[in-house]
Length: 374
Image (tube, one colour):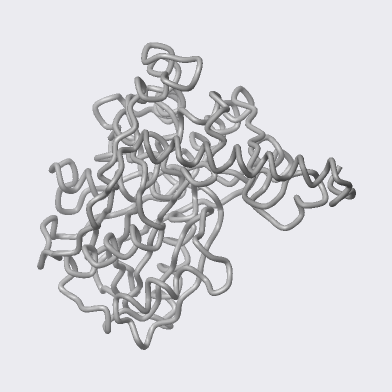
């Protein structure tokens, strides 16, 4: 049987850090309130488009695998905050990494986009259609954030993570997975303004308003990730004692702790990045996996459980067997350009742009334009 081994890994985090104290300068909150409810202390804010984050992560993953861009057969770009819809974002990465023979497509299942992409890439390798697949999870949530909504503004950050999958005869990569969606509850996590339908609902494209039912999201996330984790362990005939590391989606610390408890994982088995990166949506889990490798928490042949949850409401759990190598074959020199502004300055600029945009919309409505938008 052909397996899809993870042979390359890389991440890209913007240098700009937005702290809880920064948020308290324009929101009615403070570090103690945010930390007690989310476990988050800071998050990253990007000064470049999402594709730029993805390219750096991709180049690092490809070098790590000892490959060149020309070796890649497929680029899968997982995101819900794409720079463009047409052309797709994956093609933007493909062009810049020199993957001239590759196919390229985007996947959007919100926070689980990378995980769904991991399943797709694995399946295409198993079927013999592809040999080398690049899977990316990347988000630029800051540009779509309602920065005056405390319930969501404290949660999210920007970043990118990527892995290279390669055909292998050894049992490695995804061993078992579960994908599911609670579509009956899709309305409890919705970003109004990210789609063409909103012009007729009073929210012009780009002027976002977030629907976020925190209590219900917590309940469904805990239920979904824990049940999916138990399901894949059962089908793979393993117990939590066999699992070496749990790398969950970092939605918030309370959710992670509740999922770990239900799935039977002790705190020492759970890898956390939530305090320093927050929730980076589809970038969260791959960044956490890459960091776990970098700090030595992933060993050769490690068995890794990766549950995730996102808007839709999508959910997943993947059981991975790591390969023999935990160090890069080559190191990429890819880097982001320096940022001319701090994270707080970038956020304040976004807030001002949205304020001006909202005022323009109101003037149009007062003058009788876009009556249907009422």
